Amino acid sequence: MGSRVKWDGQFSRAFDEQQGVRQGGILSPTMYKIYINPLLDWYQNKHFGFRIGTIHAASPACADDIVLLAEDAISLQTMLNLQETLANKDRYLISETKINFGNIVRNNDIEKEICIRQLILNDITSRSWFIYVNDILSLYDFESIFDVLNSIPNRESWKNYVKKRIETVWRQKIMIMAERKSTLRLLHPMSMNCGTVHNIWANTGLDSISIMKANVKARLLTGVYTLKSAVVDLIRIKKSSLLKQVNAIESDFRYVKSTSSNINTDYLTHGENRGHLKRNGICLTP
Image (tube, rainbow, N blue to C red; front, side):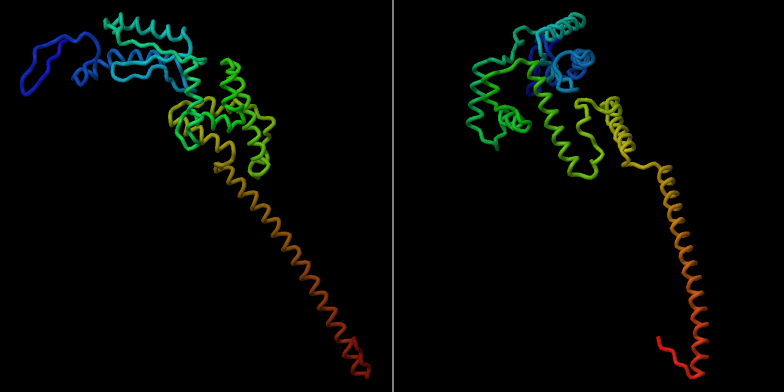
């Protein structure tokens, strides 16, 4: 592929493009889709390289420049082999002079000195990444960050330790919340299995529609949303209980009315007797 420079209405002589995608060219988007997209799709579909949770972050790209990220040498070599296979298939070249290799070494003295310097010089209002990590360690009651730097654990033991600390802290927080809030009184924090989720969330996809459906299902199970049939049953129960109360009140009212009639009859009878005695010169006092 050749290129020419247009300047002041005139074109320079042509020169060959040895490699790469021409910046700003008409065919650049098409060539990107042909050569770059398949490689990125392969990495994502095959779950190669580095991941942050469920997010694939192994191959960030800018134009025709790609960064390959992996946690170990085997994964990185697998990604390089796949890239070489696609390059040979599509017959394009990789510039060896532009390839750089970097490795994050955990026991690097320079990085350790930078970390200590950042922690000492920056205050809590700083946006430094080291300050943010220190805040997270304090949030979950970890040891001091200086203690961690002095005795750096291996990766597996550190992952297990972090997982247990987070589970313990959240279990304690949920227990405190369950004691203070009436809506959580039926919750049993000690019987919870941290790290596992309900089948509703375990089978939910990453798209917005699946997440919306899972929210509706969870609210139906927890009683936040009430079905129409449940509402009808509740109304029927309330009506039956109200009818029983009305019948009881009517029964009490009939009893009171009957008792009042008997009292009036007795009063009238005794009233006639009092009048008869009064006429005969006998006066009754209460």
